[in-house]
Amino acid sequence: MDFKKGQIERAAEAISNAKCLTAFTGAGISVESGIPPFRGAGGLWSKYDPRMIEIGFFQENPEQSWAEIKKIFYSSMKSAKPNPAHKTLAAWEQEGLLKGIITQNIDNLHQEAGSKNVFEFHGTVNYLVCTQCGERFFHTDVDLGQDMPACPKCKGLLKPDFVFYGEGINTEIYQGSMQLASKSDVMIVVGTSGEVMPACHMPVIVKQNGGTIIEINTLPSAYTDMISDFYFEMKAGEILPKLAEAVKALRQ
Ligand code: APR
Ligand code: ZN
Image (cartoon, rainbow, N blue to C red; front, side, top):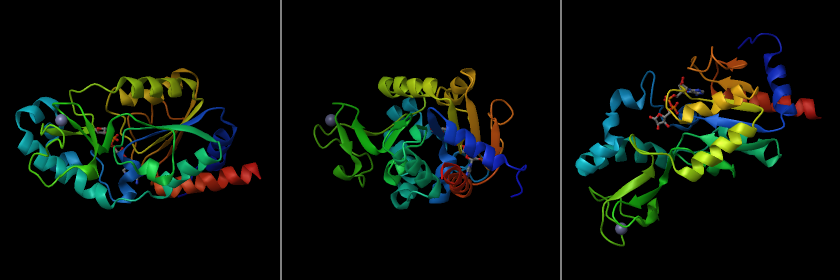
């Protein structure tokens, strides 16, 4: 990929000199781990009906919703492993360079790569919550084989603990994400179409505060012509290790 001369080096400089480097990630960072994105060619929403994760529909038609939810979310995520993109962000956190990640993803791959300060803006597929008693269970502690997974405690209907359409964002996670974004002077935006509010506002906060946006996406997004200072039209798993090499060279 013949980037404009020095774009990688200049982005690496911004990363290396950042006072508060953060990342905002979407489904695209997990595509190379085998998890399809939601939008674009072959995206999940071209195969499945997003109503299945609309809270009103789920409450009215739990059996139909659950059947689709297992296909959409639980099958591909079971075998998915972190890829070099997740691992680069985790390494930057371990080196004290990256302060935190705000992710829209529910696949837990950032944590499996070793990232600690992760705000899961849309929750996680790893847990389920009881719609009756509110108890939360790790996914291996419940029987997902049932057509309508029941709460081990009160037999109520379980719901995956990720944000359905029509549900609000967890207050603590929302506030933590806003705080991180408002402190960030450089944000790496990876693999997101930037279409879903209020998550997609996070990079805009950084830009409004005069911060630098480094975007990585295989296609232009809602951010590219609006707020991105750098745009790498490349796979996350390819460009992030290259940026890591350039940062390392700067810091030697
Ligand atoms: N590397 C980088 N970017 C990629 C890659 C890749 N290997 N593969 C795909 N992409 C890009 C696509 O070009 C697209 O812009 O990742 C983006 C994925 O966009 P979406 O599928 O819309 O995912 P996301 O932005 O995370 O969706 C936000 O929508 O349905 C809801 O709750 C769901 O969290 C999700 C939210
Ligand atoms: Zn219960």
